[in-house]
Length: 286
Image (cartoon, rainbow, N blue to C red):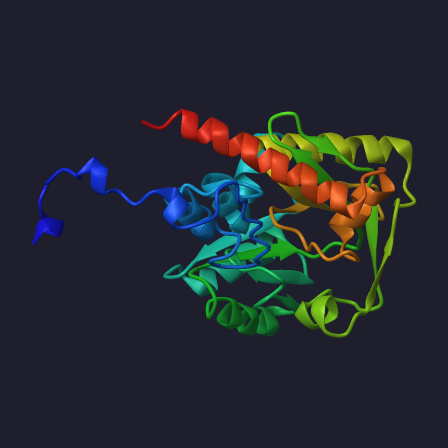
């Protein structure tokens, strides 16, 4: 019955953080998708008063949601691939008409709040689009339909808290038409070109936009910013990945290795950044 009252907590009976985890411990939440990089684990760790590597609750949850991310980045003046947002309960026929008015086939349909290309489909016509929407709504109540573009996929690594630094870009070179879950994790049908073979002017735009995007979402620690570079010379920011793959052969650590920061040193820097953001966060709490 005490749970339903406004009774105050006896401070001398609070559980000390040292009773939960080893003093000086820092969590590295290398987790992907819902409950991993969407702010849930980050919130849990903050309740436990545990330092952790990477973005906080707000920036993690924001970057996980594709529709919200697009709207924030648009407000920061960063170009996005044209899209239509659809919410469960919308008139699907009317929304398909809107897609066909604003976009051209092929289009990509994506659950707004999923990772690793889960639930994403490519559609070449209206019937395929209807099927794609049905699939996407199995994973989320909000869906993004995005213009398909003929583009190279270029990625930039980010490191820092409020003084974020970026890497030279790297390129994902695919042997498949659509970089889906299987291509990413099972079939191993990709290679990486580091640094990417693009002009200095394009490099400068991508690095600047990546750093701007990181600040726009309130990012901390690390992120990988993924761009589309079209055959028309357009640069679109596709997504911010707040917890990129972190094996020794993943793009993010390889990008920093190309900048002269080894894998062990990168981990040490991220742990230091985690401690800094933890100390600042705790200093503001009573």
